[in-house]
Length: 347
Ligand SMILES: NC(=O)C1=CN([C@@H]2O[C@H](COP(=O)(O)OP(=O)(O)OC[C@H]3O[C@@H](n4cnc5c(N)ncnc54)[C@H](OP(=O)(O)O)[C@@H]3O)[C@@H](O)[C@H]2O)C=CC1
Ligand SMILES: Nc1nc(=O)c2c([nH]1)NC[C@@H]1CN(c3ccc(C(=O)N[C@@H](CCC(=O)O)C(=O)O)cc3)C=[N+]21
Image: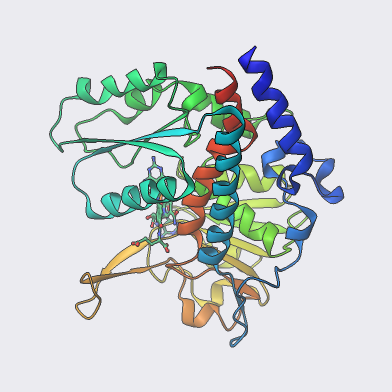
């Protein structure tokens, strides 16, 4: 009875909100609705900050993420009023890595601001595997709809075993092999799509970047970013090449690309001679570099030599303020938009 009620709520919201509607140009693609941007989003948003001082348009991920987060907050409020429930996220952090602590803190803050319930489960660096595996108890918690184990885990822990312990329905990171397999296969729809690749595509949508038929290069092939990004771009009919640490002539391959998504974690890897003039560059790389003049003694840099690329590319994401904030915004959408909703129906 309650489940039917939730479904009606979602369908009504789907009809009444543009977020879930497919623009004509994308309807024919075999993609989950969550992946389609509203038609308005296919043009560079005039309300958003596109700094045009230099050659490339700077894609302000922070501003776009704020926009998305405020939409989510409204949606959560409506959901609360309508069905008396809010989505819930459990975040598990093992150890004391400073960057992981920052990212987790940002995720929890974003949940709080959106009215999403969050549970933070912190474990010491040297904790036994069983203690981490016990987080699978969140699988049975009806108030938790997404479970996220922050990576990387300390060396002594078996990442595969721990991720496998999470229920597929709550694998908000989309790292479960079933989710990844469904992402890779035509005609299949994953329940969750990894947040960072989803954020990259959303940025392309929002800036009106055509993906179909374009040459895209993804630098990096990790399970977390590179692989799912290349699969997603392929689903949108880009011709995708994957460059990795053992690729010969990476600059030659990359310089053929209309769209470059780079996730290597190597500062200044992508120089201007790697880029075709007018390419769109999405820099996922986030490396902390010591900088005594910065507030926290370090600053973040991407994979792209920004000063050079900005003169060659047509659009580029900065680091920080590009993909990072989108990753968090996308995490929230996964808890609230269609596939996330399915979890809510079930309880
Ligand atoms: N902004 C955000 O939201 C997020 C940012 N990140 C950042 O993205 C970066 C990548 O993360 P992640 O995928 O987890 O990292 P991994 O270390 O797991 O993977 C890095 C990938 O880059 C490839 N690579 C490494 N060096 C080179 C090189 N010189 N040339 C070409 N390819 C290379 C590796 O190739 P091979 O497979 O051959 O080893 C590997 O596939 C990091 O800086 C990370 O901090 C990650 C997640 C989210
Ligand atoms: N299970 C899991 N899921 C993840 O999604 C995941 C993970 N593990 N491990 C690590 C990577 C990295 N990641 C980032 C999230 C936010 C920013 C982010 O917000 N960056 C800000 C700056 C952050 C700061 O203030 O330092 C920016 O680029 O502007 C960056 C990186 C998610 N990851």
